[in-house]
Image (tube, rainbow over all chains, first blue to last red; front, top):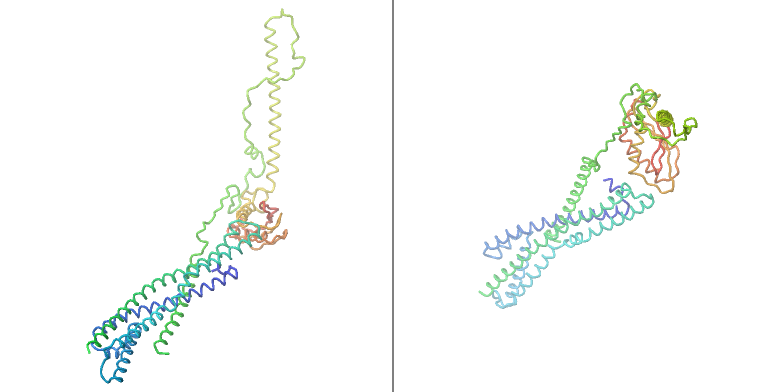
Length: 223
Length: 259
């Protein structure tokens, strides 16, 4: 603690900035951890429920149980678009599902849009983790360089280069690099981890979109 | 805004609070660890054993060694080396000793008697010369021992009849070791004279700067050296308060006088 108290004002500011980066990045790490965990577990439960159900309207009635799953968003968007297509067909022709591919295309676009929106939501704040991971060591290095400059200035004033004079200044300066690394390392690790998890969820969303479209097309073609 | 997005925003705030708590906990943990295991603990404690001026707990009656008696001289002065075998010196012989030229008809008995007399005189001269040289060497050594012994041997407040250590020299040794680590100066010939007051337990009570050349860096290094050295001061041998003046220079530390 004394080593931080003895540091110069610039080094202290650098340490404060790095501390802020660390607090924010850990907040994002915690938030993303629970978000991705919930999304994964509720997606698995939703897929079980989806394949067990016979009707879309039955699924739509129960979809509030899986609010954290991105697949429910996709289902809601696809089902909503499907209902609109059906309602439009009913209004125009007064008879069941349309057999042309225009309705399926609409549903496909709706699913694609929902997928993009969910990817954006899942990747939100990850940029900050990447920024923290890449810039914190440099910010810490800046603090170290500044601290060593100050230490050498002091050495020049005292006229002595003994270890007792040189070492405290360098130790005070190096704390900035240490804190920079402490902030950066978890951020980089978490960024890579969440990127992998989110890629898995994106694959699940793509698979679900394909399955949903297949079901819709089979039903429309079967009419 | 849907209830879903509100829940997500709340989650982020909770995460921020949790993160701040984690950082605070880590900070406290580090502070506690620092107190529990101080950073300077791995540094090995330096033990000073000054076999020459080793302090003693209680002064004892002085031995003849400190009193400057003949025993001291005998102990200090090594025995003279054995005299080398007498070598004939090329000294001019007295006229009387020079045998007069005798006619060649002199007997061989007279010649042998003159030779033995000459050898005896030569040996006598050799002994006298050696005795004078030895006396001169002894005189020089006596003078040296006498001058070196003044004010150096004995404990503080001792009067020459007490044996013990030179506590001031011991402190000086400690200060010198500490000063070697802390020395720094910015002027050409810095100097600082400090009077130290040490209580009966060896604790530094007070320090008074008697004189300083005005070099701030040097003054700081001296103060630091005193701080470091005073952590390890032993109690004065006679359990009395002790006071001494030390002169700090870049070349080293000297003492002026002690009470």
